[in-house]
Length: 144
Ligand SMILES: [Zn+2]
Ligand SMILES: [Zn+2]
Image 1: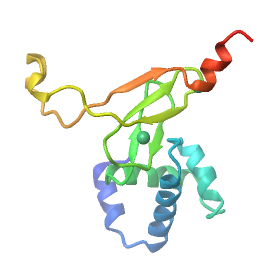
Image 2 (image 1 turned 45 degrees about the horizontal axis):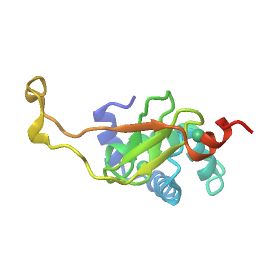
Image 3 (image 1 turned 180 degrees about the vertical axis):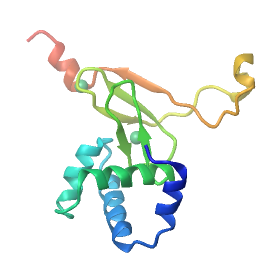
């Protein structure tokens, strides 16, 4: 985990090579809606930057998610995933194959209804993850 100070230093440092790498990572991530893991982003980016390291990809993904350029998803599974779409939206995750798909639906509750135990918190957002079986896994689970 990178400290806030170190992060600020990184962002201020006029390192063009870093910036170009970060741009390419962002471009590649925005091309897909599969919510790839850092390893998967690395494989995508390596086609354009053969010498990039997994650590560099990981570091840039962390920076991009801190600056709000992308979203870091930490679903119920152990795998950390990244989303090139920075806007708030929900996801549905297949509990069998761990695929994550966008669920474009409106927030169904009002923040006026928050219960007392939440009132002392400064609420900055919320997360909601739907879980289930994707169409392929439903088909696989049917008797042949
Ligand atoms: Zn599935
Ligand atoms: Zn998404």
